[in-house]
Each structure stands twice: as C-alpha cells, then as structure tokens.
Length: 468
Image 1 (tube, rainbow, N blue to C red):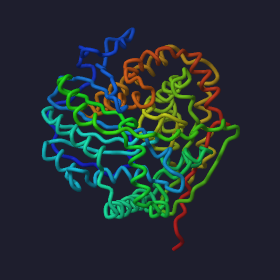
Image 2: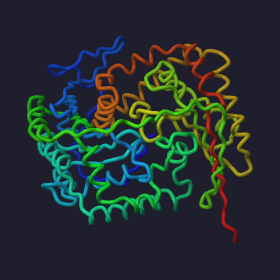
Image 3: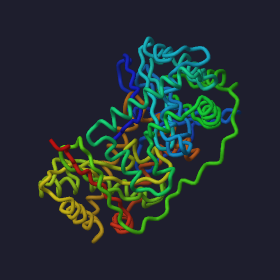
Image 4: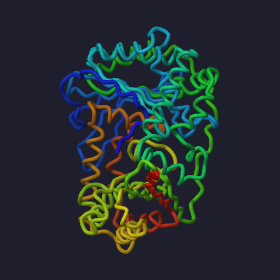
C-alpha cells in the first residue's frame, strides 16, 4: 500500500501511453552491467555524480514520449529535529511556495500548462518531488528543480501560510477522522523505542507553531543541498542532452556540510507490547499487529518479503483464508512492509504490519489466536516448494507493477532509493535474484525468529462513542 503524507496532489494532462517496465531492452552507453540469471528483464541504468556531490541516475525508455524528473532529498521525518515534529513534512510544502525565478505556485503552473503532473511527499527516509511531462519539456523541468534547490523563497508569509495548511491537514486526516493515522502513523509510535523512529511524524500542533523562519532556513541550507540529493530521469530522452542540462543547471549549486547522521537503531524487542487506543469517531474495533523486520538487505529480509506474499497479499493469502473465508472474523485484512511505500524505499527500522476491522461481538484475543494459528503453519515446517514459487510469482507481479507504475515514476522511485541508501541504483536489477535465493528452510527460520509474540506490538482501536 502506497500512502503519502502529502496532501498535495496536483494533476493535469499526461501524454497518452504508458512507460511499461520491461519494454526497454537496450542499455545506454556507460550503463552498469547488472544482468540477472534466469530473467531477461533489465532496467537501463546510468549512474554518475557531479563535482558538488549530486547523484544522477538516467534510465531510458522509448515506450512513450514522456519523461519523469524526480529529485529525492536524503531527509525524511525519521531524522527531523527534536521538538520540531512534522518539520520535514512542513518543509515539503514550503518547496512549492516559490523560488528565485518562479513565484508562488508558478512551479505548479509551469508543469500543468505543459501537460504534466507533479507531486511531492515525505517518507521515513527521504522527501521527494517529481514531474511527469512530455519528453520535449525535460530541459524546463531540470531548470525548475535546480531553481528551487538553489534559491527557495523562504519568507515569514510563506511559513505562516504553510503552518496553517499543515495543521489543517493534521486535523482533517488524523484528529477529526475515524481511525485517523491507523495503523501507518500509530504503529511506529507504539512499536519503537528510539525517538527518531517513534515520534509523531505528522507533527504535534505545538511543534508546528514553534517552527521559526531561522529553523526553515537552516533546514534548507543543510538538507536541501546537492550532496544530499539524487536527480533521476526516466523516459524518452537523449543521454547527452540530459547530462548537458543537468550539469548546466545543477552543477553551479554549492554543496553543504552535512551533519552526522543520528543513531536510528532500535533495541531488540524482548516482550510483546499491547496497547488500546480509544477512538470516539470509530464505529467498530480495529486491530493491528506489527512485527519488527529483519535488517534490510539480509536473507531474512527477502524471506520476509515472500512471507508477506504468503500470509497477507491477495485473496489466496493464508490470513485472508483464515480470518475472512474460514472464520468470518473480518471482511478483509491488509498491510505489508512499509505502509508509506514499499519494502525497498526505506532505510531503517521497519515493521511488517497486518491490520483489520472486526465486529464488537468479536474479541481481540479471538482475532489474535487466528493470526497466531496461521503464522504457526510457517513455523512448524518448511513451506512446499510450489507455494514458494507461487509467492515468487506474486512478488514479481508486484515488483513489475511497481517499476512500470504511474508512467515510469515507480522505476524512478526505486532508482532514487537505491542511489540514496546504497549508492548503487543498479540494485533494481538484482532484486529478483535476491528473492530467488530464499529457500523453504529460510522461510521457516525467519518465521520462527521474527514472527514471535516477543517481537510484536499489538494495537487495538476501541470505539468509544460519546454518551447521548
């Protein structure tokens, strides 16, 4: 499930056609050789850096005459300043308030009047901005992104305005909404111990009010620098021309001295946590279970990706069969790894989460017993090889849907994430091979180690209707 904190979804017309992953079969000159055994699928990747530290990823796709320009900054709400909760999200809104050569909302108008769409969002470990435009407007978008990277309009008027916008967004999406923030916003706060992973990412209203103009300027100067960012171009473009414009517009921007990254590690959980949250707007109970994930990139991490497919994804998943079809405890069960994106675009502690709504006549313990019974099937014996292959098929389907999604943006998202977190965007071509290393024995081992009650947090939403 993709869920953006940003309420800024600005739409226009997009050129007809779809950038489908897998249609590009040739790599541009200088691309990394990242061939996969057992599959012909390849994403073209060319990766380099400017002298100021800006990372650049180019990925050609001639399927349709469109391009995606995505700029990702290596700052998300996970490491925003203390006593400034929600600040990373607030700053995302500031980026649309004008720059050195574009006035307020002129960036938006520039994209829409050229037949494009754009958006921005704040996630755990990055803040991103992207545009999808007709291919001949690539130079314009590169210039516009560089313009706000080099000279954002930071004024008290803009700050005050966006503080109000964000506070209203919190009220509409969380405080005045039944099940607001459940479980994507709630679970990290209950499951984690480290403040960086456990604070209110959307922001406390007092913290949002306390943000000063100096805070904004310092945040921009520190984190919105080229050596803390990656520019990704996906679609129908000429490589030499794209490189020329990237150097022309981004090359002169000065780098910044980046602060030391805070420690975002989580202590190993040793006992089950259980919380009840009252919700006066809810009309029925809800329950979420969150299990701490293995470290990103390990064999167990990829095993959890396939366990997610077996247990949770689709009507054939074990939890759907047990909770919905066999016992009728709920009308549906959902969740996954990283509810604000996917299992590849985060870079820190994470939970695998399953969540559902159920009738008041049903007890939470009954639901938990059904979940535990289902998980025990994975723990008691290795899964059959044919079931593992089915999970691989579902995983590949999701992966390719993601890579080809939204006119090439899904591809840009993975390339940017792997560039930011691993300095290796070509890892996009290694994902399937890593999953294929997973064995039935590793599935069982991972389920036994990570899907234990001592490694999980249970969050129950208790509907408390006000007295008449």
